[in-house]
Amino acid sequence: MNDATDITEDFGTLYHPKSALVFYEAKGTEKSMYVEHFDMDRGGNPINAHPLSVKEANVLAKSLQTDEEKSQTFLKPKGILPTNVLHINPSNDKGTVLWYTKAQQRQLYFVDGLGITNGKAQVPAMLWIANKSSLTVFALASDRRPTEKTPLHYAPFFNIYEKGNVCMGSVSIDIKNSASVEEFIQAWEHYFFNSYFSHSLVANLTRQNIVNLWKDLVNTGKPFPKEALKKNNKILKNLLR
Image (tube, rainbow, N blue to C red):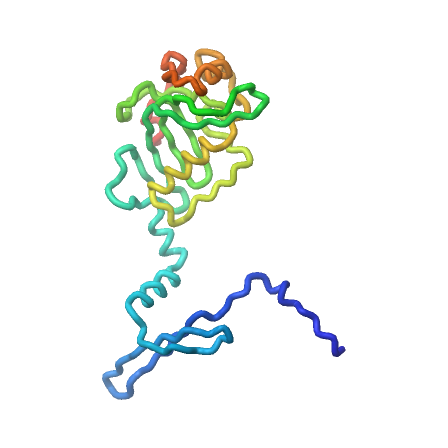
């Protein structure tokens, strides 16, 4: 019974005292309060007593911010709303963003079985709609800012279902409750273009063979051929219902 067993490894995350606050209150009818801040030495003893500074108070307030308060910042812009954002539903549970991107060059990744080299290629203008857990994409025929009447085309990529929703496979999606609209958009574009395109989920999403299409575009600098896009008989307004 005298043998001591070290069980500290079973504790999980260990937290060490870093600082302490002592609140002093004056006696009398008009009570005033004074807060003193202490640092902690390695042994957990309070040292270096001093009045709580404004900077220290701000750090404390930030650390005490609740999840509910953080969720109130979900999909709020950091400044002026980005011009490529078309619609926002800021609901924390069902929040969505609808945005578009112009034709551009992107790094693309393909599984070996497709026989397409990884590399940079021109992609068409795109329309994106996403919530915290899912993404849907379409192609656009031009870089002009779309309107409710803008026709949509099938996104000419692998891993896309007929309705435009993206199969993310084993990609770990982690959209924070406090994500700004800019962070939200950046995260989804990163998830999409930095995952491996692996297979066609629907035949004939493009007007030419999709494998040959990307073989002809990767690392060639050629513009994306708009004639390869295929309309899906929807307009942007259909996404807002």
